[in-house]
Image 1: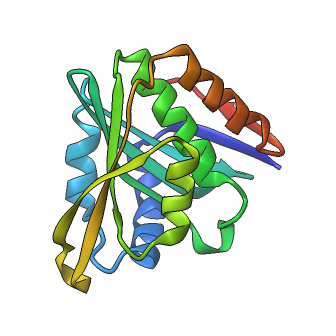
Image 2: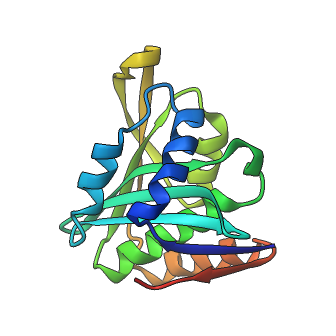
Length: 173
């Protein structure tokens, strides 16, 4: 299987919004995605495509030496094909390229699958945001990966990438 990662563009938003509506109880709006895409210097948004179809997407905000994963989602029928792993690998590498030293994110306390993925990437729990997901009355687990700019962390990323079957092509903007 070949997965192509590319910068998210306006033309991808119909597919992104379709996935967003399947995955999240309160999906982001078109205008929110549009405003995020306009912030090119401090944001990175990607789509994953298989055979030309958008199968997932992810986004990140950069501030100083911190990067914050704002969203990551995979079409439900494409779960377990390492689409999320590929997206997170590229996001973190882009964060490192933009001088980030730490990466953070929030995840639903009950989403054990996502938490397992984040632990694979070295994220550790750092706190809880009570009722962060108000639409479902769920708390968010705040997770951090530190020192992502260090050689040891880059070796971790290489090990993760080596375990992903198939190929990943990254299109540049």
